[in-house]
Image 1 (cartoon, helix red, strand yellow):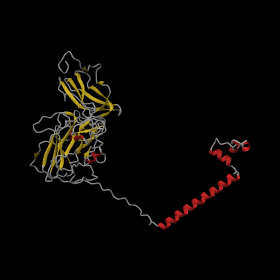
Image 2 (tube, helix red, strand yellow):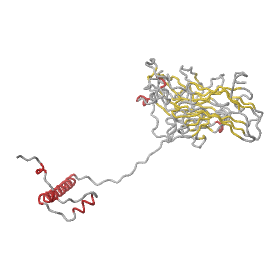
Image 3 (cartoon, helix red, strand yellow):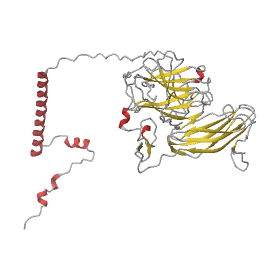
Image 4 (cartoon, one colour):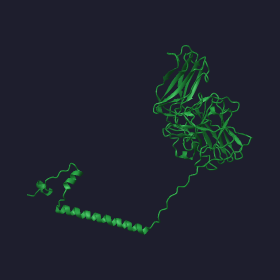
Length: 476
């Protein structure tokens, strides 16, 4: 039966044609130019007494010449013997691509039922052109309409990047984790109460069933993001990112960022603002207390107002859920122009982050769930001290030799001498040419020299030459 339990419908079904370990593969037609909210959806059926079969949805990038593993599905993360709906964020792709389904069997005998049904794409077309936009929308160069509060957030919502190349984007405070020398930008990791630090990664994390397939900025296998490597740390371990101090702000100050919360045991991500005494106020939480975790394999957009009447810093706290079952991804953090620094971040800060390789380099995704309402804040009575220690790179001045004092008189004499010499050479040359031409002086070797300069040169006998005066009409 298909995913609707109908016996009259059809679906894809894997049948073995050989014994031992093997791979089955089916690929889609070629697609291109998907928009940022593009999602892939399908139903998967796996029935097996043992966990020796894996289904790999892949994206094959034609222009890049590589493939991205979008997810890895087994009976560990789907209901054994039941149809399970799978959603995967594909995001913005300018290049041509295909969706490929690989099914890997990892034992000698095949004793499983694997089927795929109802493959669909939604929210994948570029936004259509409009003659006019609403008052809270931006009119893109291609005439599409996007929300104004989605400008300058590293997300190509227009489809032609015109919402990300505006001059005013320079007024936003932004980090996309792509700077190889200082990937965390203005973020600090100096809270001594934490258990570990965020890591910079690209591609798919090594933990199966979890982590983003690619970053949100570029949707490229080589794009970067910050993430929590959940297999390395115990449950409830914490990592924290914080900003420098910000000035008091009203509702014109908004924080926007994208999160990836995929995995059966993913932990929580919490956004706070913190005053100078260490008091924390919760602004947003990925899984509110008493709420149910929703596993989403897509980049989700978070946006919230920051109306704060005192100086504060922004704190992002990630907590490990089940070990190895929930890598939390963070990308494209931005603050609108209503947010102003109270203290300027250091221009060159030595990043305190783990640089060990953790991700596979050929992976890609995206989706957007917008949180537009201002969230209810809650005050914590527990105080924490925050020590602002960061290492600033010192660049030693380069020593240079001191030049001799400048003498304008010597300079003038030298210039006059050079000009006089050039004039004398020119006068001699002009006199020589005039004498040769008026007196028909033949210079030995001139014919040979002309032939060397121009191989087609031939000396002509001028005995039969006629002047132009002789060819002019004569009066009778």
